[in-house]
Length: 140
Length: 497
Image (tube, rainbow over all chains, first blue to last red; front, side, top):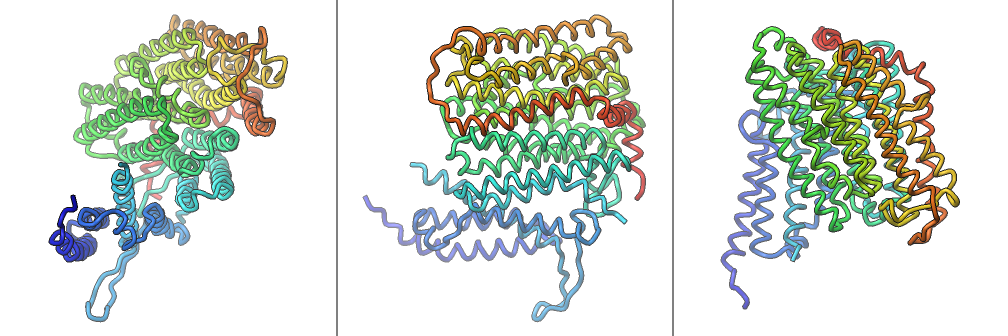
């Protein structure tokens, strides 16, 4: 029997973007308040999972053609290189740098190298969660 | 100038190579070359680090430039530098050996990244100076070991790995609980700082409770009596190179953790904690000997010999004097090398005969004399026949035992060597002597060479380790001094840059 899930599919398309943008917000908020790469990554993967529920794995894979293993590896590389590059400056591993910048539209903002590390965490979390879900989901 | 980051290289290099090996998982040539390259580079850096630690003393770096008890400190002293170097050396040979032994499907499915990440975890655990960070590195190595043990998905593997995963999840939970308990008492996680605070708070009762909890946690990983029950069946399920890696490295991380905590933190109630450790060490040896003599499965015989060695090393640690600790260090490194060599040797035997049952083997000496003699050398080395590698360690452990007044238990350790010898000579008698029996599969000459060359090199290294004791003694002296006198470690970590 073919189920009629027009409403689910239509809502999922919109809600996906709401969750996704919220995850970016949470990721950015992680600077000074609760949030960060880990929660952001989980939220993003939950948004993708919603799409998987509403459609199916194959469709979602054509829409988001990422190799999640590579995504995880890229995230790890980003995190490691952020942590490791102070070594080349003679500072201890994991030393972070920050400064204040006047950005167009946003005004005076602080930019941290810690955010790059967090970006790595974000990618790893999305990559790992989606790998797990895809692997279990494929197993009929 | 804080260029002490150097001590991180043996951890970071395998980590980095693990990441880049996650790309291109189907390209075997790329996987193999880069795996060897990564381990080789890490080994070079580890040897350089070893020399640096020998010349300049303990190296440390605190992440993110935080002041010492607050940041995460990584400390490379003689003990950890020696262990890190040995770990990488063994892995180099195991990976090489794996080219002939591990199946292509496994190689294409993250086998090499798994090895790289396990190295990250093992080296990190040896190097870290922060007790919670130790937990983190334990998790890193456990996660990768879950991958390696289950990779391939044969029935026996699945049965072994479910036990393995379950036991480790439980022990990890207990680990966090124990660390939290310790933190609630001393209020710090930096290992040097903990050692200082434990001396200051004067709460022997609760500290002893924590000591016993730690012994349980690490004992589960190190496979001491009565917590070794999971080890034989889980390890036996893994393919030979993985088994070699686990047998040579993983229990040793547990031993290292017990050694570190029992020589750094829990040195105030020796009559309870260290006597308990001694009693358990002896029980471990007995249990291991029974297992090693009871089975006809070559894998299980050597696996039970891991358990025996755990007992011997921890007996040395429990004596808590410089001689016994030096012996424990000698024996620890010896055991890592010789166990790897033995597992690789029996791997070849299994490859040739197609079975791991001793009763179905026989007469290999005729066709493979070199293999037979090298096996005999390794077996003698394991039992500690001079001048081979096990001798000095055991001698010093027993000598330390006499110095500490543990007369009978020391004699028992000596006697156990005979049982060890008997258990491994049984393999020699059954597999190499006697009537030639029909073997199953055909032996590919090329594969045989790939297996044989790294194994022989490793056996020769163990021989060199035994013969070259004289040159190694200064390193071991440093390590034993440091274990015997916690203030050396504490001062090196707590001092300002």
